[in-house]
Length: 526
Image (cartoon, rainbow, N blue to C red; front, top):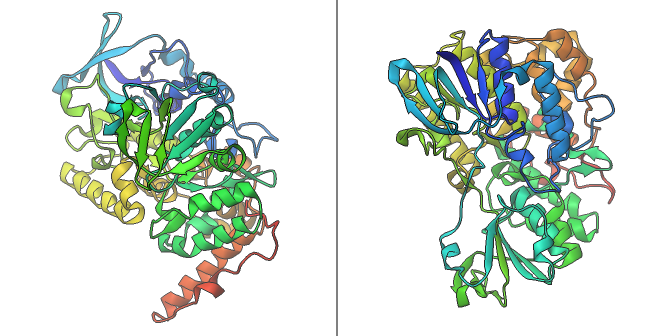
């Protein structure tokens, strides 16, 4: 019997396999149905560029290469990095390609029986599902009425060629929806994008040549989430001050966000694709579709628009969290009911989901790695899961916290988490959260990178299980740090505000003094 099977050889699968190998699980086997690794990323649309920089996207202990701090991978570059990673850590020797899993049976004390399309049956003690949550497309109910026009899902989209000269509606925002709308708007006769409320909080990939996610650092994100309500109007002022049609469109989109915590109450959309589609190519934002006539040729929206002579609809409406090959009771598990979006209370250390936590900001790859580290420690018995009742209670408490922060988005996007909260929480469980006060005293330069550099995975290699102190120091000192910009200053003012409020409970600092408006149109907040 195999100690552990990992299903899926995307980034989640290869990092899980690597962490299991480092914990001594030498017979781990990773199954991938495709002929090469990369998972859903390798099958995505042709022009895909990741929305987290390589600094954020890299795994903690495999440097991306000097001079690439502010670069963003294409899908091929991402797959190349994961392939090199798999070779470096000998993961590639533990992957079986073109192995499609058709059924998994729970054998209770006898582990799991895994059937392959080839007819082969494997048996394992423990199972890690690293298949992602982009497998089963989700459609709105009204999509069933589109019987006179072409309709598809972003899961199938590769390029805009088939939409040349047509009248096209894109449904749903987010990063994929924004990219699809941008490409189609350049070739279509007319394009619309239907948004329920907003497309998330839109930020550019870069500002002034620097990766914007360098600002996803502890200097601002360690503040209480209520601070998002003060930060959001400040950021909107910065964008409008540019007097640029694209950034005006960006500000208009962000102004649609109704979350109480503003930028910290919704997910990030880290691309200018949709603002460019609106400002440069005439893409029109409309509300939810509420009525379908003429088989889809005429669509009416909640904001009173009538879309006439529609030729095609592309749904960018997300996915169901489903694994159809699992036993019936485990096929459609809700990530929010899993302990840390990973462990089922009734399955304990027999089964783990990797990659079912989507960060609002930040990057999913460090989360995958942190989950993989925790999974490997649990599977090998070096860490113990809480009792089942406690797992259920913690999952319920986490669900309540995210419900308060993300409101309706937490109900709709069941995998949505707060990057810093999630990473720090898992790091506390593992015992690998860096001691900021320690480094502030003994190594201020390193502290500066921990505090004002991107909160990526390497800082969690400084201590605890799996620590690689020398390598972590070397990599962390190469990472970019934020300039002393308005975001940094806003964070400092926020810290003063909360410190004073803690000392004097009735202290109230007027918002207009907490964050000063920009002093010029060229302010860089990267």
